[in-house]
Image 1 (tube, rainbow, N blue to C red):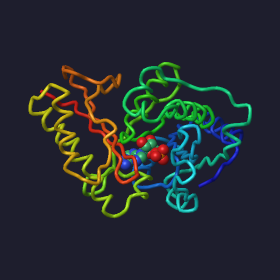
Image 2 (tube, rainbow, N blue to C red):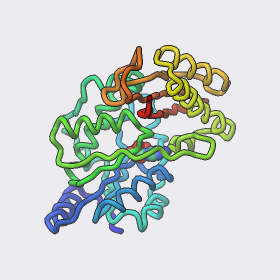
Image 3 (tube, rainbow, N blue to C red):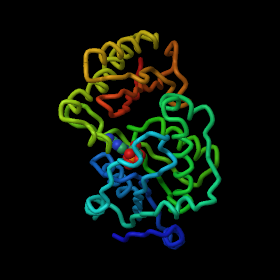
Image 4 (cartoon, rainbow, N blue to C red):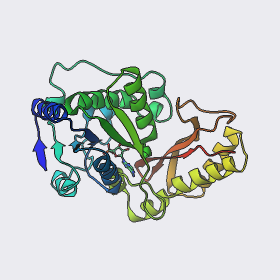
Length: 284
Ligand code: AMP
């Protein structure tokens, strides 16, 4: 496994591999790697000749006052975990990605404003900008994202389609703890009792999915069922949103008529913000 810090070197290496007919699978991450990340890497490994992982805590996707400074960083451990799963690890410095006169931003209109949008102003613009930049540097044939960050994956898919990016965006299933809590680097912030309480988000989504599958088609009532489930867990201190959305456009639904729905929510447990979602696409 080789570590590359310079964008120019990463890009030249990727171009050379592709000229030799090799496919490149790419997994962008912010590090603090867990099984969720590793599952993406395993899928990339199975489907490509070369696997590239990147580790970059992207400052432009954190709003002022968010956890950029205290976001968990563990590059040494991460590199150990990547051994055998990635061939190349791109580890750029902030100055490499954002020179002082950097002035371009990528905005995916509409989709950025849904779900997490109002609670994280500028977040998806930061994500789309860094991902497009990483795509141009790494030149992937296929790029892998987790369903856990559903809105992010949907936005990247739309960007790839709108801008004719020559790659495939692949969304992989959410990896969870046995109690249902979705793995996340931010789970490290949770105290033990909060970690237990955090599974309430998954339980709420499951309750919503059950009602939906049993025939409930009023999104407001499904939202009510999910909020009630959350209210039973006192350590959930805030529900930012929890509702039913069109899985492709991310528009919030009123009456569920299509068979492609994502139930998604964001809650605060203690001081930690958590997101999760369930895709329901097998309605009768
Ligand atoms: P992050 O390091 O949080 O930016 O995540 C990097 C990638 O890993 C993103 O595509 C995430 O959606 C994905 N990911 C994070 N947590 C999980 C999980 N529990 N299961 C599957 N993928 C995940």
